[in-house]
Image 1 (spheres, one colour):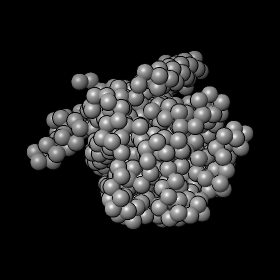
Image 2 (tube, one colour):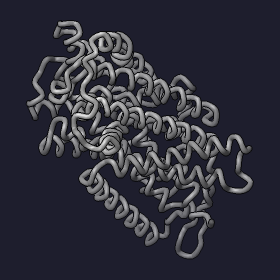
Image 3 (cartoon, rainbow, N blue to C red):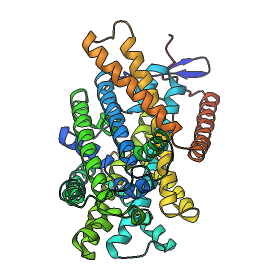
Image 4 (cartoon, rainbow, N blue to C red):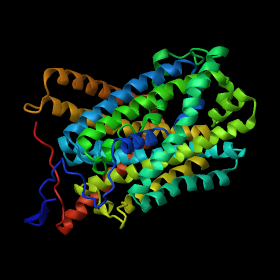
Length: 473
């Protein structure tokens, strides 16, 4: 980063080279397999293992919502892959919005994305608790035990990340292989039995307008696709990001999409909707029903538990990377750039885990169960869709800027993907419902207060860093 120079009472620093990764002294960079594992490991958590229960009241029409979100998630993944080629730097959604629109928009994207990963971890761990209970045959009604399990799920990945990136990479690759086992089983063997039985639920048991039902289920489904931008968010930790990030993004997103659609349809055909609505561990119920042995349900719960730890581990890394990149640009508090001797951004790790802990405690004391899970995943849909939308605006601006436009064929392709990703993001926000929107808005207001206070403190101390101003139209 360029050396700052004095200008009056304020220190102004030259903008950092946008293609340069956030400074790091690690020598263990991720290649395509590791970056793809980061995508699949971050995307496939325990959300997909609980989602069939959330979707059950909406019948088979929920599968249409799943398919629509799948198309939207692929568009988002392709958009980020394209953006990572043009702006190969760490920070993902934050970096792109900041590069094109300046500090305030960049902060909006960074804060929202940070909330996504922190609130998302809370949602994952709520689902994870369902499967830990299912694995041991415990009831899900013991609040104290649920909270203790949740704390282990949130803080063990923090410890793994403190050990160092190389350990994170190894842990991710191992858990990816374990977590896909139940999904592959349900997408193949489970689907075969579901088709042979043909006991799928009604098309639209709610009786509501089809598009309204699709919108509602789509807002719920978005949660299981969070992470399609994981490799671009950690571009500074990926070897040759201009080439490897797009490859990892596309491979990881398509693999997850196939497993999600097929396994969810299989669950719908194996377990009655009334039974699905009363459990937080539908894969365990389906497995036990399929084999007639309760131990098989506990066995598949083990895979879901490992899956959740893998997702929490990957997201715990990313939850600190975006504020770290934003802090390096001077729009997040400087403390987020502090590293341990093993290259772990410890301030971001601890604060993110603390926020997730608060959300888990509050949700369990309040609604609890599936209701708490649904509220958390709807909030993450909003906080993720906002930076997705801002990234789509950045992509459109880049594509239409004279001198930066690709050849006509690539322009048409990338513009189509960008418009689809933008429309998908807006649709997800407005489909989430009033309560999640209000809760998210309150957290965004807190963010702007933090931003204003940090700017004022820097200005008063004469250390304000002007990393980037919004470019003129």
